[in-house]
Image (cartoon, rainbow, N blue to C red):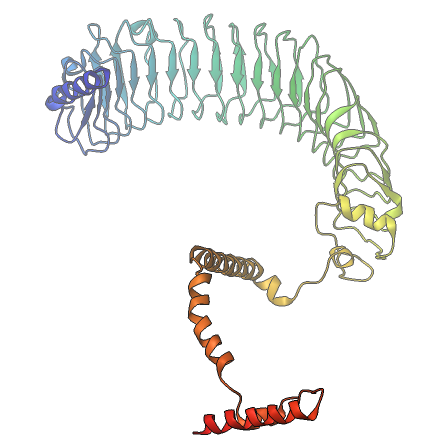
Amino acid sequence: MILVLYLLGDLLIRVSSTACYDGCFCYTTTMNCSKQSLRNVPVIPETVNNVDLSYNLIFEVEDENLIQNVEVLDLSHNRLRIFELDLSKSYLKTLKLSDNPLKALYINSTVLKFLDISWCDITHLQHGFLNMVPSLEVLDVSHNPLKVIHPLSGNLKQLYIQGCLFHKITFDLPVLDFLDVSFNRYMTVLKLESNLTTLKASHGSFYQAELALPKLKVLDISHNKLNQVYFNNPCLEILDISWNSLRSLDLVNVALINLDISHNLLDELQLSIEDLIFLNVSFNPLTVLKVFSASLKVVDCSSCKLQYIDLPPVHTLNLSRNGLESFTGEATHLDLSYNLLDSFKGKSKFVDLRGNRFSLPKKVEIAGNALLGNNPWLCKCEDKALKELYLKAVDKVICASPEGRSWDSCYTTKLPKYMKDYPWVPLVASGILTILVVICAYAMKRRLWADRSTPTQPSQDFEEIQPIRERVEDRLPSYEEALLMNKPRYANTNNRRSYEIVLDRQLSSSSI
């Protein structure tokens, strides 16, 4: 019964959608007219509040009454050049106008919360723009030729202005929580006073950064020209200042969990951050690294020049390409590839020792699996140390002596060429053989069942054979058979003579 009611309701909804514009799809409160080559806004049913008109050829929206009952409107990827509507009586909360050749924008709405005008051709936003949309919470003006943005105010919580032409940004947005100004390559000044928790300012031209943002938790200022920074952000948890020109780093009163300072010019680094979990200092000319953190788990020190390392026990440690000649530390997963090591002893579950100077297997003692290739190994198949390493290696290792010989050749049976070229042949052959065995077994079993199901008749066979047997026994022997028979012994000659007379009579009668 419930299923029938559900189907009837679904049918009524579909029937009610017959007023949907030709080529569009309407379902419940949604109308999808995307990619229909429309040039004007179609008539929208009164029951619809979510309309998708993206990827069309619409160049103007003349009548705001057409969208009066709509709450979500997507007009992205069209040909709009001007959008000027009085939406004071509209229910519109989300408006997407991205990827249009927009040059002028006028919106008057008291309920609009989300506005996306990215990838347009807007060169400026008029004074008091946000005053016309007092409820706006999310504004995206990214990738527009904007050079100046006037002081903004209002209830904005998220602002996206990446990929513009700003040189500086200075404004006060007390409610703003998220700001993205990345890919503004001419921006050199960023002064903010707000309650920001997330700031993204990568790929700019900053030389210095002084951010008095007490509630900031996430900061990305990578790919800039910073040579000096000062942070005093007690709530800061994630900091990315990679790809800059820093020679020193001063972190005071921070609660960092994730720190990325790779691709800088640091030659010495000492950190004491209690809650730090992830640290990336790769591609720095570091010679000394000291880190004090009880929570540290992942450290990337690859491509440095480390000579002194002081780290707590960690889960993952990357020390590749450091020119190390020896190492005595520990980590669950350890990367020591492409250094100058010729001996190693450790208890890591996994260690990468590729590209070093290992030649003698007895100088390598490992507890878990390892990558051991690209080393000048001297191989002797009878060497027990070599076999132990072979069982723990997870890559294909080639010997330097004998040249070109692999470890596999020492401990694996050489397969015929056809099995290497066609490894599926043994599988197919074994499969066919298995099928034949099953068929033969089934045939034999079926024959046995047939023999058992056929009843035997011993009494009938006996009755058929008995007359033949009696006739054979009653028949007198032939003359030749009689001659071959043993002659009986008699007590006297009279009896013998009488026997011969009887025998002659029988023979004569049989011949007649």
